[in-house]
Figure (cartoon, helix red, strand yellow):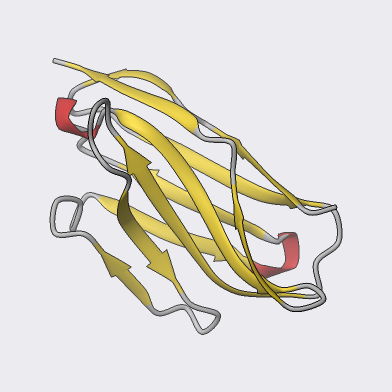
Length: 118
């Protein structure tokens, strides 16, 4: 059974940095796209960034120039480097994987809390 295991969240002061990781637990045939979403209290989940198999990336305007997504295909892992963090970045961050495992499937991590204090 495939699971996504996230790590790296925590409490940081404004202007600080955090690095999130998300790795596949279990066997998966192939991975297409990775993405990071976040959900702040009383707000809808929003797409933060994504990366394709070929390494093409997209970012929400609110994080451009501050966040960087990367992937290690050999380790089936995706990272989110977050710099110059702001209080409005406070949210639960979820990794998302689109891949093929007896059919095209979409997987979610359990979520990791990121809290940025002012």
